[in-house]
Image (cartoon, rainbow, N blue to C red; front, side):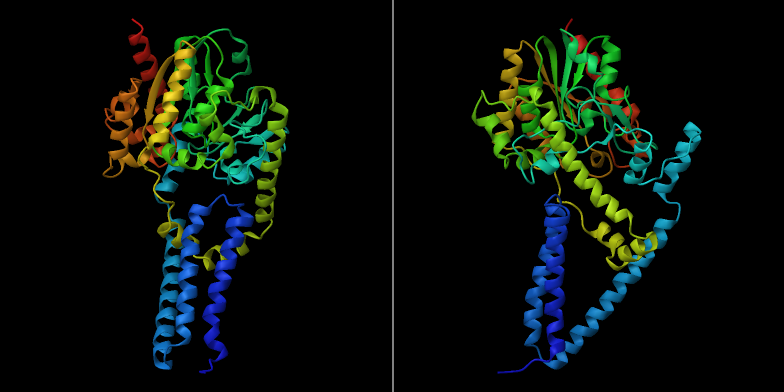
Length: 444
């Protein structure tokens, strides 16, 4: 039997180490929350292990060639990483938004990292809580309760895409509404959706729900929340929809709603809403339990962030360079979310329509476009399929892409600094104005 030098086993050792580290980051550190991202690392380490075993049986001459190739490639990777670091330090498009914000508002762009800004504000506002997606971490490890919103009656700290960190006082159920709205007897609009409905990265009253409240001078409930997909949105109607609602707005975001539904269908709790028309978690009466679940989960996230912040800044930069962070971010992207709708999506909408009929409400399907639609050639296959389903179910469609964004001279003006993200204040305002105008015209 041929004996191998100890050095020949180094590739196997390194490749197994990469696999173990990937498992740790994916399943322990992130608790399974970023499996889609780490999929590429699992694939890479698996291929590397197979190659390392094959490497043992190669001739010495071939091993030398492979070693030279690998060393040269690694050198090139780090050279390019250094170039990206230098490029990022220059004032590119991302930097120019700081200048635009300062010119338009007379204020400095808040360049703090989200956790840093949250920690600073937390010292002044003890009731401050971070806005996070319950769906993101409950789906990883389901509890006895599946929340659909945030922590109740708290100042909720959001995101920064427009130069400042957004925040709002959540209502009694954790949604983005003035709490007094729940005491009203009649409602002109009830919105369900994800972060685009919640009003991500802008302050109240600049979200769609608040603008509709101002335009109509009537009562509006915003039941949108970050990370919610179609099945959760249907469940939200089952759990929270009040009586005497005139118009239900189903806010569909084309960027990730179908992919979100595919994940939601893996939840035992959520599937019960499809299988049993009478199933309910009775969430309106479990606010305290929901808050405890969310606070525990969010505290775990904060502890991880705090541990990361304790690392010396220079050390952190060195670690990022060693891990080729800029190069990886450029090459490795999350899988495309533009999935084609399936039968379950149609089933969910049928059930939503059934609720609206039983509630004597008008159901509107509001189609919200994504940023990439206006930056490159876009595949409309999913968009067309969605419209067919809406037409088949005889649901009123409000096509925000076609009726609002596409008629703008520059649709990118409706996004923060014309860059990738949620909508800016103008974007939310134009959406609300169009919805109000179209529904008002339908009523006459």
